Image (cartoon, rainbow, N blue to C red; front, side):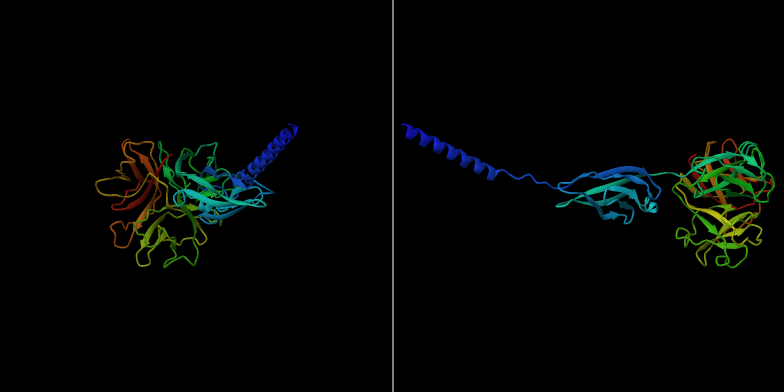
Length: 382
């Protein structure tokens, strides 16, 4: 009886050992691999190179983590810290909403024994160009200068701006005016150094997303006349229908420029040319801010005709401006191409005013507005 019990007990123990061994062999092993989460963020376009976007999150299975960019679109937009996974703007020029609304990269993450990948996505929001209205006052003016005060301009030497006169209540400033950055503030100033007129008003166009360049007049780009300087830009070349807005700029060569200016298109060379309205010599090394393509509400051309001229002004008829006293726009005289009816020279300082129904362009000295003269107009939000 005892022998039988012991044998049975022994068989039970052996069976349990066998079952346990089989269970151990059959249990799946738990992998100990690196894991990573996708990264996503949204920022405004045109950020600063070097801006930190955040860190891609990952967990090591064994050992330490290492990060690298396997690919990215567009190439060269982002960089990553190999030890921390911190993502940074490498080339801010690639963060343009119209060109690349989404910037994306594949990140490879490794530990001591395994590798995985994750996606980093940067969504861009559009920043529209804007116009704000500046009025010269005793408080913001000194001599021939009135200082601008705007958060997008203050302390920003790289700001991109053009401007035009705006009558806005009845103050004339029959002077050629330009832009100047003094190291801290932007300003509008009378090029002939006479005192700025208190109460004179200006539409200041700030290009946040538009294409605005600074053009320097040199002997190399003078063209066929010393009153010319030839523009060379892919958005302008071979494009007679371009709309160009122009402002003189004292920086970077500290050149005063007392001429009124217009633009014309040379169809023989397929180039746009800036020229002095009095056909006098254009100062070499003088600078111009040139708005080539704005992020705008409307871009159009206006031509003065017998039907829309009254004395020294021409009335603009456009749905984005009509019955809109708060509309904001900038303009430049466009001479056109040789042979156009628009081939009119007007050596006058020009401004805009609101009639109560329509906006109009007028001569600051109140001389007659010539027939067929044409203007490029860019309308945007204020």
